[in-house]
Each structure stands twice: as C-alpha cells, then as structure tokens.
Length: 282
Image 1: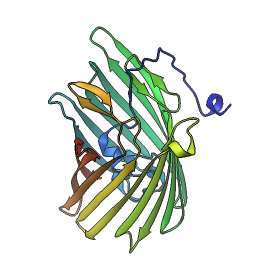
Image 2: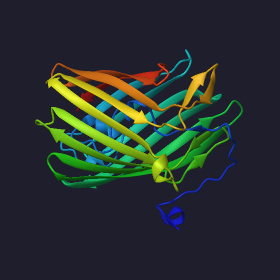
Image 3: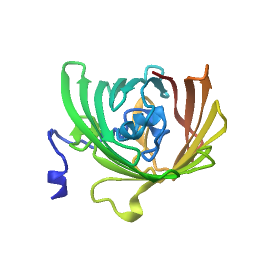
C-alpha cells in the first residue's frame, strides 16, 4: 500500500534490463555531505530540507566529477535563495546516453524542523532520439537541540527506468552530532530500498573537522555497497566490495569563497572517482 500512495505524482513504466546503471545521487559532490547536515551552504546539495532550516543558505555552487575515462565527467551547478533552490547537472555519457538533470527545490521550516522537496526534470539524449522524464525527492530535517540533528530523505520517489539507466527509489536516515561549537562533527547514515532487510542495509559513518576557521576536513566509510558500479574497459561493471571511503577537504578564501575536493577509494585500493567544487555565498 505504501508503494502506491507515497507521494507518487507521475509513474513512468518501461522495460527493466539487467545491465541498468543505478543512479543513486545527482553527483559525487552530494556523497560527501550528509542528510542530517545543516548550517552549511553545500549541505543543500543533498537534503532539500536543509534549505529551510538554514539561516544563511543563499549561494552558488559549481562542481565537477571526474571519472576514469577521459570523456566521462559530470558538471553540476546549484544556486539557492532563502527557501528556494535550483540545480543543473550534465552527465556527458553513460552507456552512450547523455543525461541532463534540472531540479527545483523548495523548503519550509524554522530552526527546529524543516520539510523540503525537489522536482527533477531529466532529459536523456540517445544517439537517435531524446526522452524526457520527471522525478521527485522529499526530505525532513529535525534539530531538537543545538548539538544533534536527524535527517530523512526519499530519493526518486516515483522511480524511473530507462533502457540502460535506473533512477531507483531509496531512502536515507541519518544522525548528526556536533561538538566544540561544531569544530568536530560526527555523522551516521543508513541507505535502504523498498523491502530491504535489516541485515542488508548500506551504512555510512563520517566526520568533519575544522581545525582552523578556513580549513575543513571530511572523511567517511560506506559499508557493504552491494550495488556499487565502477567503470572498467569503458563499461559500468558491478563489483563485490566490503566498503568504499572518501577523504576530502575545503579551504575558505577571502573570508567567503570555498574551494574543495574529495577522492573516493574502495577496499581494493582503487580510486573510483574524485570531485572538485567551488562555493560562493550570495
């Protein structure tokens, strides 16, 4: 029953093939932030609810995700004003399909609780034709105390299945703990799909450290990414891994501009991808 009534506004049905690539998040830059994170301009790229709970969230973000192929990369741009945000992403090529994502986010809330949603328009350009789709995300951010926050996110609520690409519905539940005036923060998240079993969840634990005002360091480990796909021999392939991790840092310049980068590893010692970004508060 939940699958039928959970905010589904559009339902697009197409054939499912085993070679589908599961698109979990818009870009790699979103993976280095957490659904329970707030009071951070870059956090709005993950949970749309963080826009409404953030008092100083207006700004512009530009990021680029580097893959293992010279012609493969995702460029992204995000701009937010008060409770409103707009996102654009260009994925040049996945299995010979170019994807362009346009998303509009809206959030309402106060310092304690916020609700947010994103409406995403997807243009898939095949060699011989173009297809257009809509998808939806919904998020909640709850901050009962200054040092703790809870985040919930439903991604790709209506699910989109193209011939070779799958925007599958999944959920994230996260917890954030903040210490020493947010100089040291801990995060934990669980990712799960419909009918997931408790012993088959994907979990991430991470931290952020700000040793000095202009420097922030981020690190996290994701356990059991069972459906992780990487590029090998110019094709996406699924590999069995115990964990994936990232390490990143950002630096503040001229008391406003933030530039940063993160690199992703797996337990085979492979660098799966890395991302760079620049953020400018408005």
